[in-house]
Image (cartoon, rainbow over the protein chains, first blue to last red):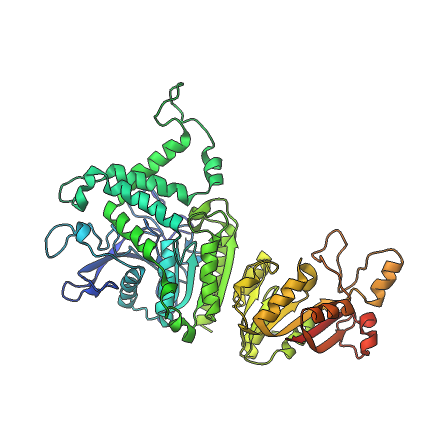
Length: 384
Length: 197
């Protein structure tokens, strides 16, 4: 099926670009104290940066996202992962906004991560890659924004781990972000959240093909473990009702009449497929590193966490979805309380949607209307 | 921007540069006006989806939460003024809400329709539930859950330790009436109270 480049509302054909933001001799100093360089970043942009550079919106992606948020790659069957939000006339209207999306530090879709080649050894970093924190991801985003000529973002926007980056960005550098839009995120994972991540990591690391993290050198891949991790995580991204509506207890077509231990139910086939396609685009070490980033994220634990924003308030939009059981409304309300107590102008909505955590990726009308209204206002205020 | 007359009256009662919590802020018109023209900051609370969007488009920070059960989210003494404008009659637990407001703010502003208006009393005498400009809904299709007269409401203020600093009584046309305190409960269609702890 050919890609229609003239689809209304689409940014059309796009390409991922690459830039070296930190060199081997000018490394990034990480929060842990370790240094990392070189750092290459894969990113895409949509729309045009205004001469005043006042219309830039930075998209922070979630755990397994990438830089390709909108439009079409020439060889791809599907548009970017947030194509329903970004494009001409869409809430993130590329006729007016300049949108940037970059693959995260520690990722595996063009930005430096644990599967990248270490300049000192000439082999993949593997488990010698340094542990990261959300603030490290933000530092790399900031370097990209600067490189693109953006001193102050109109908005930073992200869901899930993306929202955590936006929260950190706003707290640390309120002078560089006018509006922080934090969707279906958390300021502190619960024991249950960490427990799910722990099982996913265990599945990966106990796969013999993980090879102590040296699978790249050994030319293997922990396919079984990574697929299981994805299957389980995927369950947490959807609500029980969503799974029921999609699959119920439907039998997988073509299954033998007698029950067995194969893929008897449609939901099993779906998860199996999710696991399989994930292997084509994601790296097991990135999964370990980035899920760990989430586990340790706890910005409000720092006593001085809110000092910056108290003197330089920025506008916050926090949203949750009522059927999200990964980062449910209580996670968002905790963020709202902390910010509101620090005197921040904060807007909060709980959006009703049947689709659970994944709702932030979907075209839920009340959700998109809220983003559109907030972004329109943001641009008007910046230009007032 | 010109405010609705009842909101303009409230705006005049709020000192410049105040930090304001507006419970049941609707479209955020009051906060938007005070933020623009009086250097105030603040937060609105609203649950009606269309109103929330309207408030966002006016640049007013607005939090969707249940006034009856979730005011605990706001810290003690965190606002100069807490406003409850034509909302007390729609909430389930007015006493607890007033207590929360007095915990959160230094000064409270409460406006309320008066069930004790003479016209309402006449309708009741004729055996009919009151319907008027200030209470426009039929009994089976109304957001209003509580009906109070001004004197009953003032008893509640006293019971929760709130002192009436100012009381402005409005007639059926929304104009300030000069009637004495004794007649306010009969001639007032609505009233605005400024309350202190």
